[in-house]
Amino acid sequence: GQNIDQPTEMTATEGAIVQINCTYQTSGFNGLFWYQQHAGEAPTFLSYNVLDGLEEKGRFSSFLSRSKGYSYLLLKELQMKDSASYLCAVSPGGSYIPTFGRGTSLIVHP
Amino acid sequence: DAGVIQSPRHEVTEMGQEVTLRCKPISGHNSLFWYRQTMMRGLELLIYFNNNVPIDDSGMPEDRFSAKMPNASFSTLKIQPSEPRDSAVYFCASSLTRPPTDTQYFGPGTRLTVL
Image 1 (cartoon, rainbow over the protein chains, first blue to last red):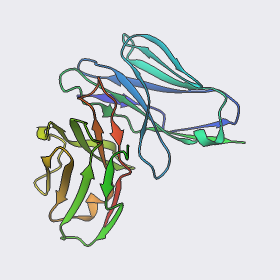
Image 2 (image 1 turned 30 degrees about the vertical axis):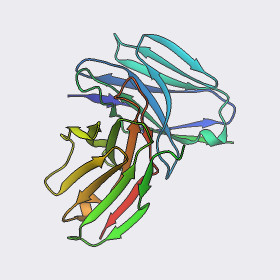
Image 3 (image 1 turned 90 degrees about the vertical axis):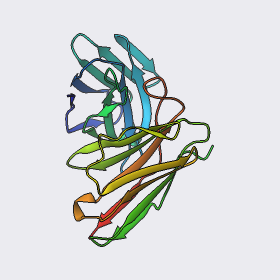
Image 4 (image 1 turned 180 degrees about the horizontal axis):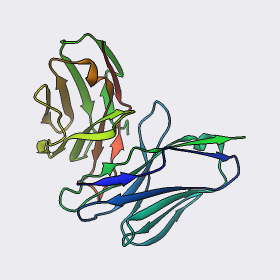
C-alpha cells in the first residue's frame, strides 16, 4: 500500500517564505509531484522530482530525499494568490499512476 | 488548446437516478484518468485508460460505477443507481503518455450532488 502525509493546514504572511512537507511510504518509487489547487478549481501541475535534490522554478522550489521518503515545497515571496491547497502525489513502482495526499491548505494573510 | 473539457459542471440529482459525466481529453493525449475528490478522502483515482483501453479500474468503488472510452476524444463515467455518498467533485485528467513521464492536465471538474 501507499501512505502519503502532509499537514492539513498552514498559514503564512504575505511576502514571507513557507515550507510544506510531505512524507511518503510506497512500494517502489517513480517520482513525486506537487500540484496547486485553488478553491473550486482543478489541480494544476507545479513540479516533478525523481532524483534527490532541489528543483527551483521561480518563486517555487521542490526538494526530494528518496532515502528518507520526504519532500517539501518551498514558496518564497508569498502572495495572496498563493492561498490554495497544495497536493503531494507519489508515483509508485509498477502502476506509475500517482497517488495523491489529502493536500495542505495554505492561507496567506496580509 | 481548449484543455480538458468536462460536462456538466454541476449536477444535482435524486438518489436512485442515473448520472452520466462526460470528458473530452486534450487532443493527442493517450492517457485519460477519472478521479473523485471529497473532503474526507481527498483525490482518489477511479479508473485509468491508455489508448482507449481501461488499464486500471481498481479504484472504481462498486458495480454501480462504470466508465467507457469509445474513442480517443471522449469518455464517460456513469453511476447507476446514484446514492448520496457519491456526492463529490469528479475530475477527468489526460496526459500525453502515461505518468510519470508526462504531466496530468485536469479538467474543471463536475460537482455532483445526490439528494
